[in-house]
Length: 249
Image (cartoon, rainbow, N blue to C red; front, top):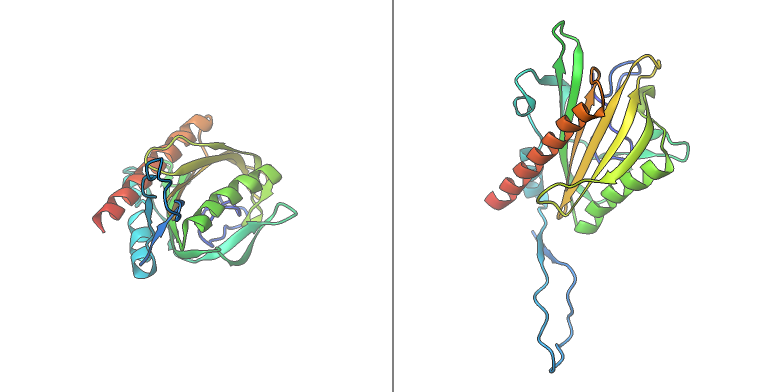
């Protein structure tokens, strides 16, 4: 079974089963003044250069970022449909229901990996998803973060693919090192039959034109803190992997 990501994310185009568990070259110069400096004041410092991976390089970067089961812990395994590289976009409509709608605007490469940790009896307990999306420019990457925030504000209750729901959806800035911006979305995941619920913690972060994301859902968590720890630890690790990959290229 696959975890269903929030429709407002820039994640994969995967879907969930209805009653199952919860299943995103050229350097661009930003800013700067192209005019001549005033003679009575020093010239401004050069504008920062953003490294934007495109083509095969973008695919190489996003493949290096998502976590494998071993990164989450010794008990984690691959979910069915372990890897997803579709550029399909899922949007939250006016009715606050997630549905597929074209492709992710500006995205050039995308990869998500789906893992879980079973209980002692072999049933699914913790679901952990991580991924990265490379965009053609910084503006498109920023728009993906903004969309998550705007959809959460507009739809504090959302229906996911397969009929599962998110309730009490909130977003807040997230303090994450070595990124340009980060956001955490928290909610209560409820299965399609309304029989099970669990904390749902989704972290998105942007570094230049790359957006990384991590989702954690723990069906046995006593409170949201335990699920936050999983998601926040995973987010720090995917950013570390992204930074190392970009430096190595």
